[in-house]
Amino acid sequence: MATKISLIGAGNIGGTVALLSAIKNLGNIVLVDIAKSIAKGKALDISHSLPVLQCNRKIIGTTSLKQIKNSKVIVVTAGVPRKEGMSRDDLVEINLNVIKKVGQGIRKYSPKSFVIVVTNPLDVMTWVLQKITNIPYSHVVGMAGVLDTSRFKFHLADELNLSIEDVSSSVLGGHGDDMVALLRHTTVSGVSLEDMIKMKKISRQKVNEIVQRIRTCGAEIITYMGTSAYYAPAAAVVQMIECYLRDQKKIFPCSAYLKGQYGFKNIYVGVPIVLGANGVEKIIEINLKKEEKEEFLKSVESVQAILNIAKKFI
Image 1: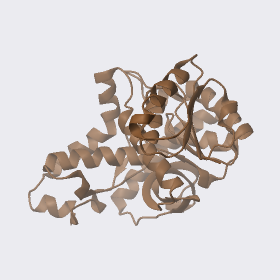
Image 2: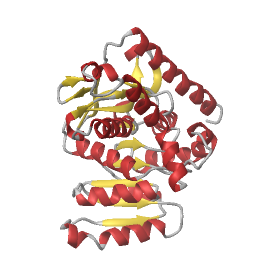
Image 3: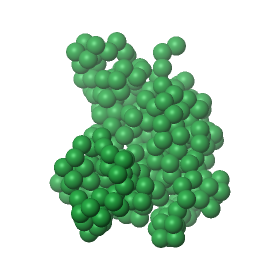
Image 4: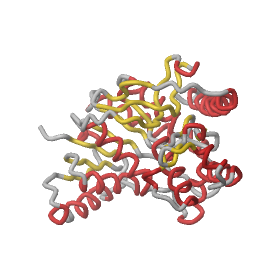
């Protein structure tokens, strides 16, 4: 049986994930959206590109969650996107109702799938979806850290006028204004960022400005386009899909369920994981210095505060 990738939400991110998945020839694709005909239209449009892409796959669009049956991977982007002036937290009650219905559909039709959640507020929506579906924690993750890290690596490389391929970094914490950039573990072509600062290749102030920018650049993009980012989030999702399907066992920062790691339990938050055919195969615990622990704690507390709000509506 051909691999099935189901995308619940055929908006900007869902449509772009479908196209990129086709380009990489990752599997047959199902686009699901409650908006009448939008999924069908995008599926048909992308299907018309398949001969050019030399991708012999099937792409369908539907309004029915029944079509996700026996999916290998499910990506959840359904929900209301952020608009200008809205925080991710403002979306809690609205998107919670969406995630409930989506979760019930996944539990009924495809309970053995690997699920990637993109709907905001991401860490909390991932927690809710796992509880509703009862899919193992290893097979329900949130996409955030891959995106946040990509943004940081781009802006750092851009400032240094060096190749983005030479930058290695990661972020921790919730997907929001309190995410923690691991500057101590950031390297440029093997040279630590601290040494780059000492060599005056970049100032500490500029690094701090970049960190602040990646925390808020989601809102920055909204002011430009009037809607949330979608090209970079979609690219991050597809990287995770490919890693899972092809058992690449790469280390990604993702929103994963903690069972005592980093001193926290019963919460989804961004941490480095090993992603492979068994889903989250390992959570990597990095030794954090006092200041890093304090930043991480602040981020986790922010996620917990939103989770407490969400639990009132479950």
